[in-house]
Image (cartoon, rainbow, N blue to C red; front, side):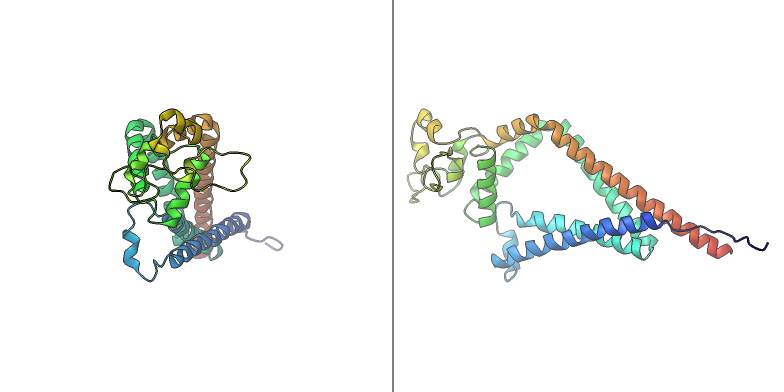
Length: 271
C-alpha cells in the first residue's frame, strides 16, 4: 500500500556502540599493561635471555602485568571488533571467554572459603619462597617491601622467617652484613624521620624479643592479611559483586547484540 513501509529487524546502535566504547578502553589498557611488562623485562635483561624467566625462585610481579594485560587485550579486541563489525563469532568468543573468567572467579571464591586452612598454608609457603628470593629480583624486592610496610608486618608469621634468606640468616658461616637482620620495611616508622634508614633492621634478630618490638613490626603478614580482610570485608565483597555484575552485564549485552545481528540476517535472507 502507498505510504506503508515494511520495517524489518535492526541492530541496536546503543548496545553496539556501548560494547565498542567500553571494550576499546579495555583493549588500550591491556596493551598498556603488556607494554609495561615488556619494558620491565627489557630493563632486567629478560628479553635478551628468555630462559631467565624461569630462573627466579620467587614470584616475578611482571607476570601479573603480562597475564592481566593479555586477558584484557584479548577480551577488549574480541568485544571491540566484534561489536564494530557485527561479527557474531567474536561476540560469542567474548561472551564465552567472559563467562569462563566469571566461573573461575566463582569457583576460586568457593574453594577459598571451604579450604581456608589449605589456602593459609599455601600463602605461607608462597611468602617464604619469595623471602628466599628477596635479593634475586628488584621488582619482587619492592613488592615485599611494599607489603610489609602497608600491613606493618614482617615475614609470613614473624621476623624469624627471614632466617630462610641467605643474606639475613643467623648461621655462623654467613658473611653478610645483614646477618641476623630484617629488611628496612619491617622497621617501625618514626614520624620524625624524613629519610628512610635502610639499615634499621641490621642485627635486630640477635636482640631480645622486647627489644625487637621497639624497633620492628613483629606480626607476620599472613595474620595481618587475615585481619585486613576481616576489617574490610564489606569493601572486598562489594568489589567482587560489582565485578561479577559487570561481567554478567557484558555477557547479556553481547548475547543481545548477537540475537539482533542474527535477526537482521534472517530477515534479509527471507526478504
